[in-house]
Every structure is written in structure tokens, then in C-alpha cells.
Amino acid sequence: MGVTNKLCLDVASIPFLWIVPLATYLVTFILCFSTERAYRRGPFVVVAIAAFAVTLWMKPGELIVYQVLAYCVLLFSACMGLHGELYRARPAPRSLTRFYLFVSAGGALGGLLVGIVSPRLFDDYYELQVGLLMAALMLLAACAVDPKSWLHWDRGRGRWRIVAPLVLAAIGAVAWLELRPDPLVIHKERSFFGVLTVHELPDAGGGRRTLTNGTTVHGLQFLNKAARRLPTSYFGRATGLGLALTSRPRKVGARIGVIGLGVGTLAAYGREGDFMRFYEIDPVVTKLAGPEGYFSFVSDSKAEVEFVLGDARLSIEAEQARSGSQAFDILILDAFSSDSIPIHLMTREAFEGYFRALAPDGLMAVHVSNRHFQLMSLVSRLAAEFGAYSLQVRTRSAPQLQSGLSDWVLIARDSDDLMRLQMRIEKRHRALELHPSAIILRRGSEVNLDAFPLWTDDYSDLLSVMRWN
Image 1: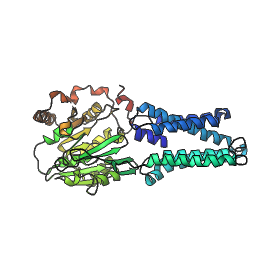
Image 2: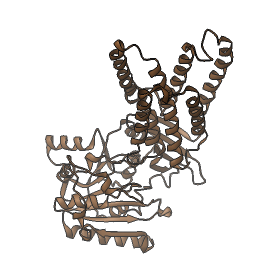
Image 3: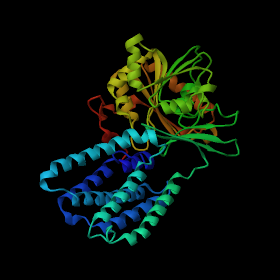
Image 4: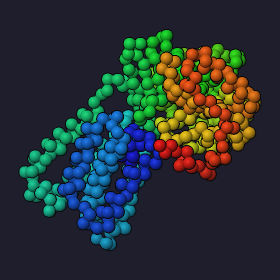
């Protein structure tokens, strides 16, 4: 589980990558418990030490396939050692039931430690290092009680005077490498949903702060007074959403709902008299983006801002059960964690709740930028299921307007409303003096939506929307 967290949440958010460490673990279990000849202590110890050294040497930006390979070799060799020693220590047949019961209980305990205890104890994914340390101590204990081992306690006490200091020195060196402070990190905190890190990066313009979860940046803010209110990244003024929001007609008291808070960048678009409600599942995110946090988009906003903590879909449905529709003029869906997809927010039943939350002439905007999945037509297919119309907007990076490459799908119930929105976006894009090729607009009606499956609470298919090249 420690390797799975390291690979899938810290190294790369690649779909189905979690299967690789799970399969590696199960293969070692099968090999060791099928025959004692599969395990030889010496070779696997050497391989584990070498693989661990490689993982320490590799830089965070190393090619993903090399990192996955190194961590899986480390996992394979370490688990071969643990399972091999466990099989050697098996009791007589009459006690095997109790033996396997304790083996199962140990696996369950490990899961509880990683899933529940570790997020409360650590500010990063340290359970892998702790697990490897415990594995090393277990292996040394197995050698100490094994009469055939050269480290057997009765005849190898002199060797322990050499081995023990070496082990302590190695533990100290690894602890220093893993725990040494990063001068650019001003805050790091772990929650059930991942490790959130705030970096402060100095530059000639006064510096900037970023919020990252694993390898994905979830928000950026400039620190100087002239630029700190500017929306950035996926929400910059040259993105599909930015063009739509900055070109919207003046309306006093617009109601805006946002699913996913990030650093609160979208609060920068709030106007005097607007009301913005952010739905966020992670309490750590609300703390970092709130008035007492490290980002000021929310506190600087001209709109009235409200946080709703909890799963967005459940929160929206609970509000509707209590007081009816939220009547949002704009509802923005941006709830992706890294590049993973919260499927329960992308189903027909979820969109039914979103449409109930919209005012009759309301606009829905769905952020679908993703390295691994093609989601534009999936969202258009969901919109069409409710008789709505969609506009797919893909924009290139525009550094001069603090905007990154992004994909958005804009949805409206009325075709004429969407047509007018498209015209306003095109006009706004020209006014910003951006190259015409920097934006691609495509109506959902121009796509063969029947080729895309309709996701429901009972059916979803990630393989059908994967980018295969």
C-alpha cells in the first residue's frame, strides 16, 4: 500500500497503475507459499538494497517508466523476503488455521495503518519508508534466530558489533535524505485525499505561490499587489471559462456555484453583489484557500463567498431536499484530483442534480483538461441526455494573460443562449489580441455523440475515454 500511494499519488496519476504493485505483491505471495525453493535470502536482500538505492538516487522528474520499474523491483524483492521468511516460520499443520488467521489480520492491520493512521501521523507518504525499516528489522530478527545464518545470535555476536552500527548509520542517512527541509516549501499537510504542499517561488515580479497535490499543480497566485487578484492557470482570462466569465452580461447579484475549491482562483471573477458557493470535500483545502490560509483569492474577492464542506453531489442533493433548487446562474464543475476522475460526479444521475441546481437560463461549465482521458464528448453526451446544448472550448497557453492550456465544456439549455455565448467568446478572444489558432470551438451537435457511452451510477467505462497515444 505504501508503494501504491507513492506511485499513484506522488509519482504519476496514471489510470490503472495501482494494479501493478498489487499484482507484484500477490505474485510474491504465490511464489513463496507454493514452494520453499522460490526464496533465497541473500540474492533478494542484495536486490532490495540496490533497488532502494536507485529510488533514493532518482530525481522526481525521472522518466515515469523507470520510477515504476524501480519501485516495483523494490516491492518484489522486499515482499519475497518477508513472505519467504513467513513461509519458513510456518508452524506444524495442527496450528495452520491460527497461522493464516494472523497472516490475514496482519494484512488488515497494515491497511488500517496506511489508510487511517498514517494521514494523522505524517505530513507526507512516509509509510513506505517505515514499512521498509520494519522489513529490515524483521529480516535481521529472522537471521538472528536462524541456526543456518551467519548472523545467528549464538555464534555471530561478534558480527553484530559490526552490523548493528552499519544498520543504524544507514537508517540515519535515509532519514536525513527523506526529512531534510525544502526551502521553497512553506506548508505541507496530508489529508485522507492526498499530500498538499504550498511552495513559495521567488522571482523578479515579486514571487508566486503554488498548491500541489502529488505531481499536479492545483493553483497558482502571484504575490505582488498588482497581480495577486489575476486568475491563473486553467482559469486564466484566455481560457474557455475565463473568456465566458469576462464576457458575460452585467447582472447584479449573480449566483455562482463551484464544485472544487483549489486555491479559490475562481473567486477572482466575483463581482460586487455576486454570491459564490464553493463545494469542497477536503477540509485541508478550505483551510489553505480560506481567509486564514496562504492564498488570498477568496478574501480579495468582491463577491460574497461561502464554503460547503463535503462531497459536492451529496451536498447539492441535500440542499435541494431542504429548500429546492439553488438557482445558480453559473455552475462550474472542477473537482478532479490530480488526473483522476471522480466518476460519481460524471454520471447521468449527477448531471440531473446539476441541472436542478441551475436557474432556467443558467450556464454550466465543466473543466475536462486531462493528460490521460478525453472527456469533452462524454460531457456533451451527458448534456444531450437532458436536451441541453454544449460548446467545447480548447485554448492554448497564453503566458501574457497567466493562462495555461485548458479544455472546457460550456452547457446551456437554450441553443440561442449558447450561440450568443459563442459569439461573445470569439469577440472577447479577438479583443485580447490572441492568435485565432489559439482557440478551438466545437458545438456538441457537431460530434457523433452516439459513439460515446452514457455513464450512469451503474455503468462507466474509463477505457472508452482513454488517450491511447
